[in-house]
Amino acid sequence: MNTERLYYIDSHLFDFEATVLDCRETEKGWALILDRTAFFPEGGGQQADTGFIGTVPVRDVQEQGGEILHFCGEALPVGAHLPCRVEREQRLVRMQNHSGEHIVSGLAHKLYGCENVGFHMGEDCMTIDFDRELSWQQLMEIETLANEAVRDNLPVLCSFPEGEALEKLEYRSKLELTENVRIVEIPGIDRCACCAPHVERTGEIGLIKILDAERHRGGVRLSLCCGMLALRDYRVKQENIAAISQALSAKRHETAGAVSRLLAEQQKGKERIAALSMELARLKAERCPATEGNLLVFDDVLDEVALRELVNLLMEKCGGIAAAFSGSDETGYRYIMGSRRVDLRRCAKEINRLIDGRGGGKPQMIQGSAAAGAEHIRQAMETDFSQI
Image (cartoon, rainbow, N blue to C red; front, top):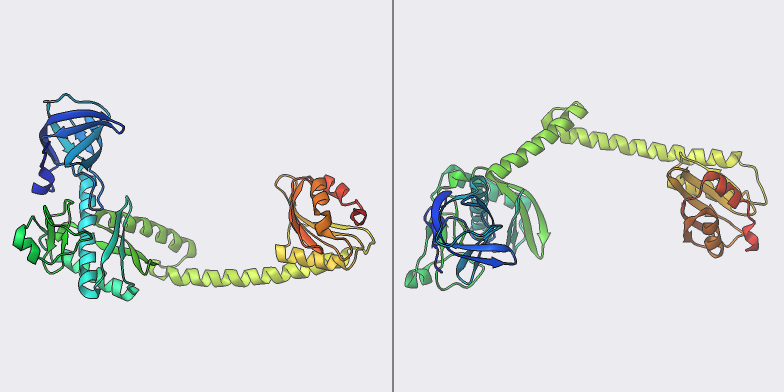
């Protein structure tokens, strides 16, 4: 059944009337075919429109076997003539981004010979995959020229050239096309085969902003957004930078430097804490009396490196196992154990059984976790593990 495609006639048509030609039940719900539709079926990297047919929500629109199916949660009678409404803001946002993508892809192709080999439009941004690497400086050049194209409010021309006219036409396309080829052209910027609805002039797109770029399969993957999505992205970042500015008592344009200084101060603090932690480990070791049995220490101050150093020092003062536990009865404990005389790898299974723990390691040192409480651990560490 042929459906007149109103979205090709007027991409800004959101309210229209149509007659139901067919209504069939499918796994995705009721599929309606209309005599005319402004609902765009998913294609060309752009998602399907949603909206209403009468009072029934349209959840998805797909083209299958040349038919445009409107998937709804309810059936509608064949022959019914009903008002229809496309979700306006959703369509406009998608057109802004898709038309912006054409400008960026066209410029990348024109300036650097890049081919668009992948395109995905998400709810917050879109991604474009180019088959060549581009530097950030090159991407900023493309971004600047793209926004100049928006400023110049160029026409976005859509047509269906045929025969010899199509054969002679140079245009971008991921597929080899021979018939019913819809060409979307932005003069001086891009000419591309595309089935999706677009803005009428580039001024409708608004800001085009490249957010990020990463190497991808020998080329580059861009994340970018346009128009209202770019505005939303800017607002979120502005709110974040304002909060950082206030927290650091720095002007907004100076926050990067302020954060760098803060990180440098934190690194110095970490280094000082590490040095103090090692000194504290040595002091703790000195306070422990030598013994032929096991030495057990509970600590909630030392970092892991200093805790290991403490065990190394205690190993020289005991004939059994030097054990350091960090944590609490409520959250559990982490442990490190060392010995010059006891094969800890051989004893690990029994040790873990006694302290309800898990862990292992080498003959001279093991580490892991324990779920037992401090008193239970003390009793367990009174065991002579050298006899095991």
